[in-house]
Image (cartoon, rainbow, N blue to C red; front, side):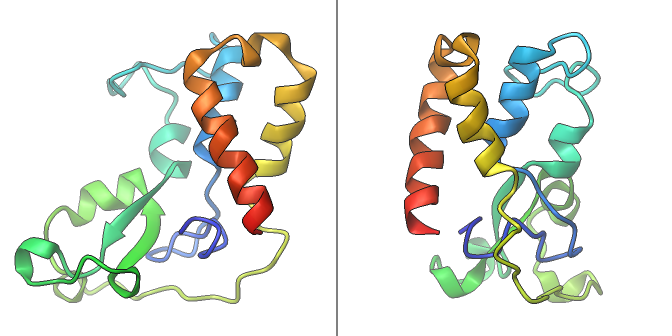
Length: 141
C-alpha cells in the first residue's frame, strides 16, 4: 500500500519514509536519531511520528467501513492518531490524492543500499524483516 500511494500521506500530501529507513538511521546514529521499541513519546525522534507511514481505514471498520484496499490509505502515525476512530468525513480534512511520482519511494532505495554497506544493520534482527519487505517492494515497484 505504501508503494501504491507513493509514500505520500493521503491526508496531508506530505512525503513519508519507509519505516526500515528510519530504523536504520537509529541504528547508525542512535544518539542523534533515537528510537524506543514502544515508541515512547520523548524517547523516539519526532520524525517517527511525522514521517512513518501506516495504514488507515478512511471509514473505520467499527463504523461500517470495509476492510479492503479501496477503504485503506497511507498516512503518518501522527495523523492516524489525530483521526483516531472517527470517519474521515467528520474531520473536515481534504483527501490529498496527488499524482504519484515514480521517484517517491520513501528512501527505500537508500535502505537497500545501506543494508549492503553497513554490517551493523544486517546484525539487527528487527531490520531483517524490514529488508525482506524492502526487497519485495523493490520487486513490485
